[in-house]
Length: 102
View: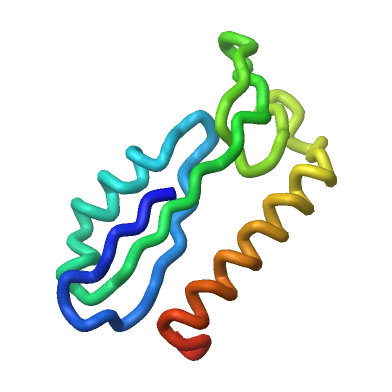
């Protein structure tokens, strides 16, 4: 997980999820380009587990839900539930840090 701390008084936290097959570095680069730290925004970028198969190579790819891009109507409920639980915990941690109203 990447945590980009605010460089001015912390106003809020953003949890940024990267796309399928990407890693935290991709999202961190966007956070930097947007200048969130200078605006008092803490960015938290969790890393998805390697669980979905790439439609091109067949290798395991990082994804929040194990779902084939070739079968978008078929989502694996177990990985969806695990992702939801992990994200809920992360949201709770961030709410304790900056306050739930932010």
